[in-house]
Image 1 (tube, rainbow, N blue to C red):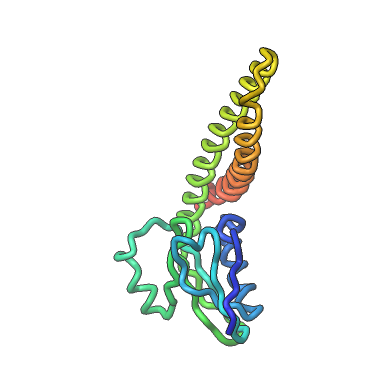
Image 2: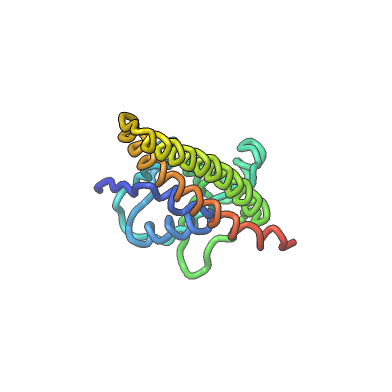
Length: 184
């Protein structure tokens, strides 16, 4: 049984239903998710086993662990840990009938909307910083000062992927959340 790491999966599958699908597909391919921890945002650890049918639930309802933890455990779900402020549960099943989903879809949409707004604010801040660096870089270049150009280029190179990811994440999360917030 070899361990396999999937890098940046939590950042790629930021919508809870996308994460559930990713985890279920991984189980079907024979990869069993190990407990989640703080480093799971960057690398999720799996162990190779026989493929199995597993239903995952990523719950971002905002309920405290003590309110519902025992109830979900009593229903046969296994607590895997947390990822991006969401509880991750798994339940192995047989046959064609998947276990009933217990997550509050409206609460998950609210969580995604809040995350989307945070990413949008981060994107705006990064865009302002990026623009200020460009303005300063051009001004220094016009004055013949070139000693800071390498520093600005490095900072801008590091900042660009963060800016692009923040824009992508905010659009994805808000596009997911807004129509679902209207549902009753």
